[in-house]
Length: 95
Image (tube, rainbow, N blue to C red; front, side):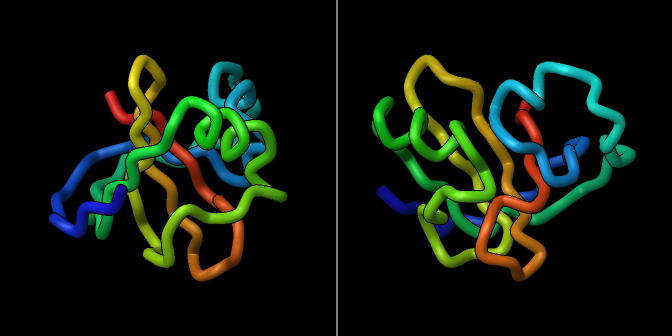
């Protein structure tokens, strides 16, 4: 499901994380907190979320927006910035 309501969030992006596990470790590629405008919100099933977060480089992006939110019941909400690439180049956990 796709929602196109825009809002501004302040997040610390991880640069080029491999998978969701990288977001739970200090891998040394964390940007300073900055505000970004989320263009779309995508709701994924548990299976879709697991596939998307298992390898951010190989995952099919769930939408065409450059900056989007990924939500899934009982899972961390993610903010993704593709920077125009075809993978999740920057990923943050929304708090």
